[in-house]
Structure formats: structure tokens, C-alpha cells
Image 1 (cartoon, rainbow, N blue to C red):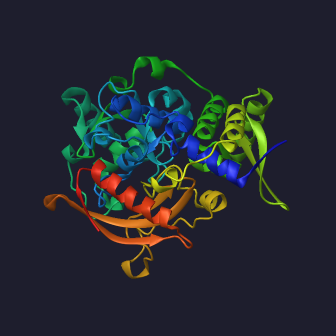
Image 2 (tube, rainbow, N blue to C red):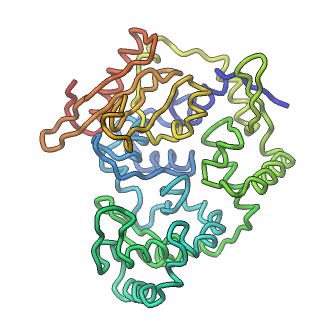
Image 3 (tube, helix red, strand yellow):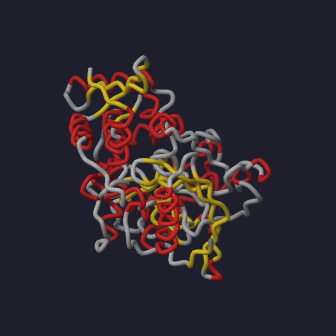
Length: 396
């Protein structure tokens, strides 16, 4: 059985996440072909998680792209999903933009979601509403949720029946999201959005799981069974996932690999052979002192951060998300954005953008214990880089 040290796994995770030197990550240093490179980032992980919060001046998917690609125009992240783009929107890690080539791999989820995962058999219980929505879209063209009859009261759970049904039709694969404008979905018939090439291709559930597990490992580097399961929200398929991993291992596509946090502890995980070789090459490379001063702000929903146990294991960093916490109970701030510098997570910054004034305010900065002068410079560098990316003046 193969093995890695924590530093090896950490450096590999950063390389696969696109957060080390471009020559180590495979991502470009600049972004002259901005849209193409942004799509490359999405393909690396297999998803770009969406979130509505824009208090820091950009939504999470924009922050993820800006943290990997210097010089990316602020409008690119919001316009990635558009007619003809090689992406589709669906339930991946959460609601996400996903490379179109993975569309067949989610057939099992579309089948399972014929009954909505939250609201039950909305389509079957409301046949007239469902038929009316489909007829309207078929005859009038794409519809936004705001175009539907009925008004939503405060809160997602009090949506009008029509808005719930259209979401259920999307989850079931009958409708697809054609594009987003001002972050609002535009729904259309799936056959008018998803190319026939991808709709016609079928994958069994075992084949789908193998494709998704390999894609998850491509973004993580090394990962435990729990991390791989959580990447695609596959909580109730543990036995099938284990079988899929064993089949991939037998085919030589992946290997078992244990992590050694201490001399007495072992954590079982998986890795692709190419990434095992990459970890060996990365081990021999050295970061320069300058690398430790070039910090980058990360979205709290970054692919590197959402698995809090993994972040603690690899970085010794206690990742928290305080968006849903009452203000008096927040320690770091409403939209706390960690700073990565070199191979470490070194600080947390809470920001608030004021577009009308053309500024982004730094509400708080919390450095990690033992932060060096280089890491403090990295934090300042991260803030300046982010402000420049979203084209706002930084106010410290």
C-alpha cells in the first residue's frame, strides 16, 4: 500500500487545487484567454459551486476563479453559463456549474429526483401546474422563475407552488438552466439546452460513480472515502462507492494510499497513480521566500475548504462558516475569507463591498497564531489582489 506524509498530501492538494505556482498546477499565470482558462478550472474539479452571497464584491464562483487566474475580468465568472457553453447547471457538490461531458454521469440522480429531494412528488401532485409550465416554455421560450405566476413570500421554503414545480422539473432533468442573468435562472426544455450528443449517451450507476470518483480525485489529489462521498453528495451509496473504488483499483486507475499524521496513526485514502508521482516530484521542489508573500483570498466555499475535517488534517486550520451564525456569535465575520500563502492558510479576512462608492472595506483581519512578517505581507498582497480583481478600491 502506498503512503504519503501530511506535507506531501497538503502540497499535492494545493497543486491540484491550482493554488501553487502555475508550473506546478497546470493552470496559466495570466488569463489572456479568460473564458477558456476559467472553463479549465471548472473541469479540474468537475464543478463550480454557486452561492448567492455577494457581500464581498463577488459571488463564490467568481472568487474561486479570481483566486486561480490573475487578470480575469469581473464579468467573466457571471457569464460562464450561456447558450452553447460547455457547462450545465445541476446538483453536483451543491447547485453547481458542471462540465457538459459529465451530464451522462448524473442520469442516476435525475432519475432519483423524479421526486424532489426536499418537497416530494411535486410533479405528480401538481400535474396541471407542471403541464402548464412546460407548455408555456415550449411555446413562449425560456422563462425566469420571476416570470411564473404567484409570488414568493420571505424565505426559500415558502415559494409559490409554480416556482417549486419548476425547480422540481429542473431537478428531474425535464428542464435545464439555459443561462443566468443577474444570477437569476432562465429555464428551458432540456432538449433545447443540452446537446443531443450528451443526452443520448447513457451510463449505468456503477459507471457514473466511477466517473465521478475519478473526477473528485483529480481535484483533491489524495482523498478519503468520506471526502469522495461528500464531493458529490453520495451519502446513501457507500457500498456502491466502495465497489466502484475497488473496480477502479483493479483497473489500475487509482491506488490505496494511507496518510501518516503521526508515527502511530494511519488514515486510509485513495490517489491516482499520476498524482502519486506528482507528489514525489513536488516533494523535491522548493518554494522561494517570495512565494510565501504572495497571498490569495479564498472563498469560504472553495473546493479546498468545504471539507472542514480535511482542512484541519492537512493544514491544521479550523475552517468555520459564520454566514448563518447570529452576529454576536461570530468570531471572524459574516463572510470570512481565508488567505493561502505558499503552503499554509495564514489569516482570515472579512470584507464588505460598497459598489456605489467604488470600495471594498476590510472589516477585520485575523492572523493565525505564530504568523510571520512574510505571512502578514501575504495577507496584504491577497487583499490588494482581490480588490484589483473586482475593480474596487481597497479600504483597510
